[in-house]
Image 1 (tube, rainbow, N blue to C red):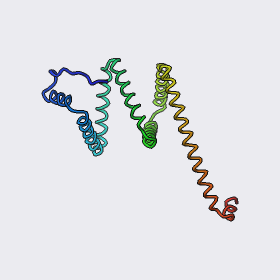
Image 2: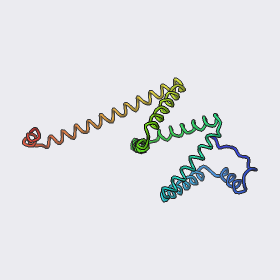
Image 3: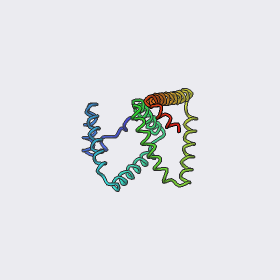
Image 4: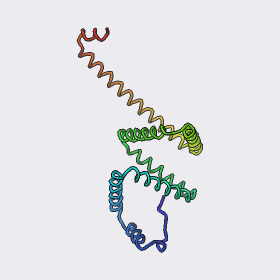
Length: 191
């Protein structure tokens, strides 16, 4: 989603100066500024207390909720489309190790969150998940449907290949171990 245009006359002097300087910065300078900001934020968050973290997250959630409540359908659709494209691009560049680490982290976070759920919250979450999945599938085009199925098939084949490779390695390892055993050791294992 493109940044919102703001009338410069409605901004303070510092905000105007900041806005104009950022418009003039090059892409490498922008990336460097953003990376410095991310590094500073990571350092600050790593040193923050849990109370400060909870307050920061609550303020952030409230700000996002206000922003989302005010956005139009067009803005929401554009934001969601940009989010999906950004996520798809990031995931396409992931290695298997990074993907597995991300999925493991998500799994542990979800497991922890679900351990605190009541039965009503669990039922509500599952119902919302089912409704969301049905809605997503009903809105997808034939091309998106085929793309989703193709992606699922590819993931299935990748998993099958990994399982076959692992099984083959294990068989080879077991054969090597058995070759190293003497007849007496084999007889002991059978007893």
